[in-house]
Length: 218
Length: 328
Image (cartoon, each protein chain N blue to C red):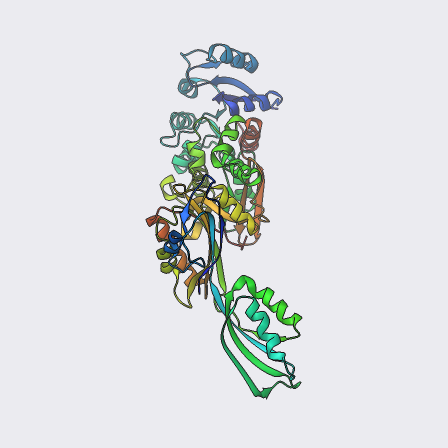
């Protein structure tokens, strides 16, 4: 599943500016890009967002069509369904059916999906808690794409410990420095500190200016 | 009421501000004044308007036979007010002039960051040995009484952290980039046109000016022993408009923030993402300092960090502190 959920580009071959082939973008992040055919577009920026696994426990009324009421909004939201366990013999105290679903979708779309489920009359009993609870946002300025973005992200990512969950890049021109907003999530403070140290090392090595947040404790 | 005799070294923007402020104050009399090339003395009190007029016309305020160093060493005065431009590398010629005055048993008030950032412990020890005052409120955040605020207002509180917007030029540039979408280059040009940035703004934009102020705070108020080289510095010249736009999406600004953690011995000046609701996010050329204290919690000082009469306000406060504390 591609991590890129949107590239805000202007599809205009006449306009002056920076022209990148889509192939280059694929190469830049190392992830499949939704477009297959090669075309020249002017790319203003790329927004990358990782899918987050979320487990949901839903309560359905024991009558026909209810499972569809739950599945349809999930499918429409673009989420991947990882597993569904639908145990007919386990019922809640009020006699509703319990369905456990694990899905994968960008975190920012979760709230929208919850609303859609509720609108379909599905009760959400539990939402799997996100285990990466510590969040920090940074802004990076420099030649972010030219200096191997995949490497930058991979070095910070430690599965289930600390991850780059969001990356938004704006490129004013091919030779000009890009600006990126990067969000790191980690399980707790020490892991976050480690991820930030890694990011700072990368910034020195790749000549990127890193702007970090000043504490919320003020 | 005793009138205190003042020797005014430096007749630039701050010097003129001091002259203006003291003119209406019967407690002080300017008996000597010097610019970078010459000096003038009148034990009965100088007509400072005439002195400034002469400087404007001829480029010199007085006689080249009486340069600042000689006035400091030989003229009769009670307090030396030293307001020449900062030399961050050696502190000279101000450093020697201040030492000369203190060794003669004269009080010294300065707004010059060079000598204070390079030699505050030596100068304070010298002042104590000679039983005179050595005060420098105007060196950090201009009119804002941050030094006296920490030393007396927050006396007894351990300072856990200090965060400051200490450079009005950078704050102005960043405010304009954020509000008007100007590029760094455009905002800097505007700051120059308005007189908020010097012809060579390098020390402002690369964080050195803020770092020097941080060193003064660390050494004179927080009992540390650091130099400019101990401050990690990142300037604002590489910031893009996109960075400010991205910050804005999540309710943040980007400001050049000086941070100081005394226990970790950490000093840094760098552009930081900061919530717009944080009191340090001040507009234009304003300065702001937040001090995190043991008992009082966080306290923020905000005000004008530069300017002629604004800096003179800090100098006047220092002068009155001296006249209050000392008999001569």
